[in-house]
Length: 90
Image 1: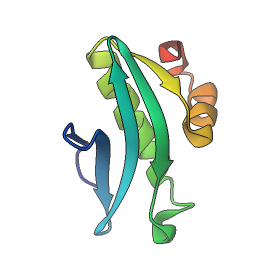
Image 2: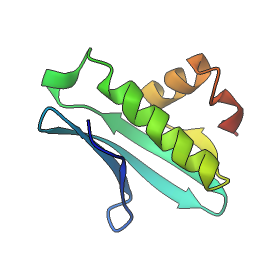
Image 3: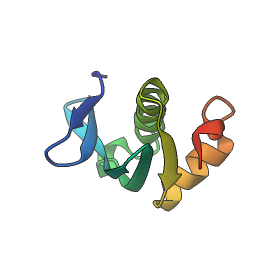
């Protein structure tokens, strides 16, 4: 697993595992991070790759003092289940 990358030009967080990239498309508006879409390659689905990506994105948002508004159903469900990061939802 690699470190989280924030491709600000594409408004996309990325993380590599097993030579494949999971990503989260986002929009930043002031102090709010809107997560529009989270996806992992089919070969990584069910491995927890998207959850590890979400944990890294949420940790980055916390470090930057951002609140998260999940538009993506997966991101919303993940944040609801997260005891550590659910306070970021706003």
